[in-house]
Image (cartoon, rainbow, N blue to C red; front, top):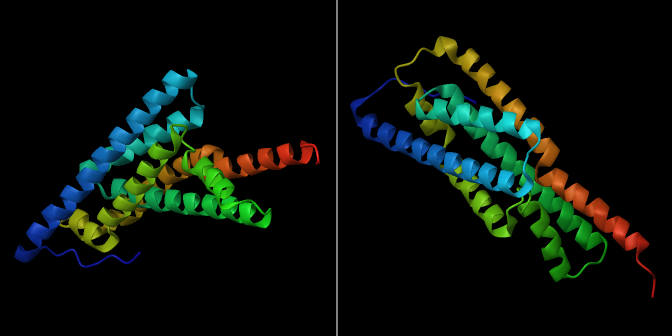
Length: 203
């Protein structure tokens, strides 16, 4: 990603304030979303995989950093947003393609698509709200404008370190996503669906 000129100007102060406000809005929505999800899932299951807790900790650390105008926190939030959108898109292609190839009806394909959308375990509605939040986040965390706002007045010499910290955070998040994200959920669902259909008696 290119790094735009970050020299402050009088005309850019309002834009910078607006962009930073957008980053804060996204950060607070992420906090609410994740804390709510963790609380409900723990109340439902009694426990969660260790990597989920580690990923949640690193995500909250990134959110804290973004709220305090740390570039690595913003980098991590941007990457996590696009990684999650890509994972969800892939999962929908997988289940949709499986439904078409196996000759399922549109209603049946729709039911299959609900499975990865509800991968977080709180139903389709909550899943759709999360997708809306990711898209909203991608819009507000616009790369060039947000970078200019967050990098204003800061040294470019520490940029490499900022990227490194963000890469570690996103790496931990990606491990959790690979274990229980939309694509993994879709593949498990298809495997179970195929197994059930194979065992079903022929008429």
